[in-house]
Image (cartoon, rainbow, N blue to C red; front, side, top):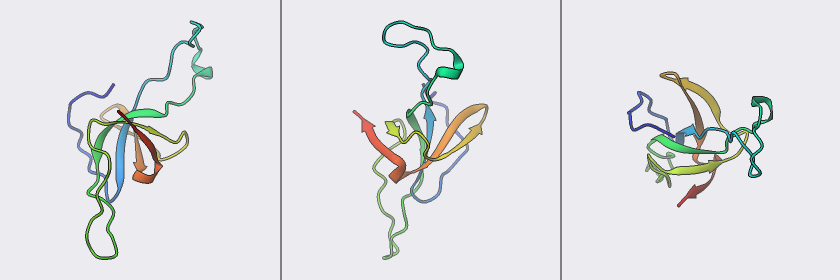
Length: 101
């Protein structure tokens, strides 16, 4: 889970920085998975949000997620980065599939 510490990173335009959740260690049946069998997580917590996409009118579009939201994103979307020793993912807003309520 994401910690409440602030990161020194400000995404541009409609980009969002997400800290992925940990991969599942066991299956629903209780089988322990080795590292090679774990799937890439597709869920994470938003830790930074850009100001929004610049529209043709010169105004900024609203970003539909906020810091602290839990989101589901595409398996291969975005770019993987490391910030302060933590794995992060930078995604465009349209790479986010859903917000977990």
